[in-house]
Length: 446
Image (cartoon, rainbow, N blue to C red; front, side):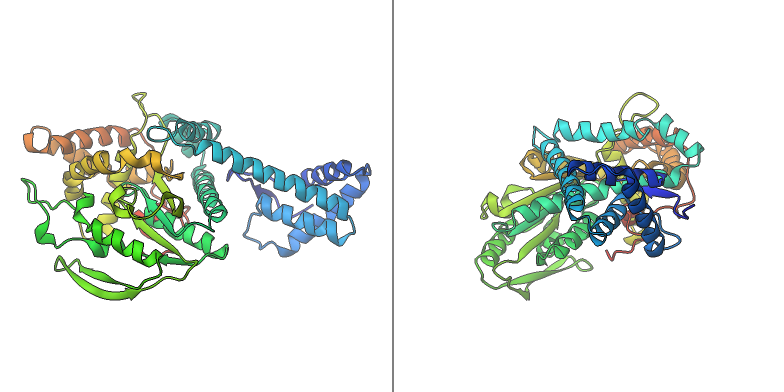
């Protein structure tokens, strides 16, 4: 009897661990090279289990990949080189098949590729998370931790695929752009992607485009006195493009510094030069906007777009709106990290959406890969955190003609959250979760 009772599948699902699966896999590999001795496969499986028990910490559930690594090692150490080779080739073929599927699903269409949406919907149905009712059912069965694990696995797998595609083009690439609308999860995605690329041996040089904001006094205000930071024209696009071109050509540039406390930009502050094989990394709301990188050939740019592509229907039969997910994320982030009132975030959201539809959405079909940052488990968390606010706002703005947009959003999100089972215990959400970027408790520095 082994102490290892469960295994984490590639989908993130946790299933019972059985030695028979290992023995069968070894036997299939042996058959591929002419072997037919099942007893040998059984004995080798026993060794694999013993090795796993030795190296696996008591509080750790091994993944399929970790088990396969031990199988390969055991086969080689026992002199079954041909069987090990067959096993490795099979494993590699499966990996290439998964990458090929991701490649097909990443082809562009008018906006988000329909095949990408189908992939996300298929995943949601497979994991019983395609409706609010199904989500509530899983929570009622005590499966919130499993939902978190399965969701995060899918998100991380998406980022791994993006890293692999960048690696395939590294000889010509000089610029990697992480773009997406507000609160789509660009910062966490950029951090995770950078870690993967660094492990692949690539050297990344981040360029913070926030330092290229024009002075605040040059920004227009609306009738409520709000500044519009959401437009790409708030940035000195010509200077960004000039600096990128010069950096890629091998020249040194001096990056400006933007003081958010005073709303002033100071020129020529930080010298920067990149090496001949370095990749410039940009995390920007408007990274897809053509003027920002107009002077750089497309083949030298890798453009990644991120969006919470949640495919889940609410009680009204309509799909949950991605913009509502991002609105709730931004409310929590701004309140926690920027001392910005949640109500101000709601009132400012009309600027966010207007800029997205003009300056971000039209260029989604120019991206090289799309990452889904939609997290089914964020809805029960946001329900517990935000429902009272939206109930209040839905009533507050009901008859305010100047806040029609805020009223519409408040009423819609209130109906959505009212249908979700709340989750107040956030401990199952790991510190490297994308949601931690917004609710706090992340292991990453933002």
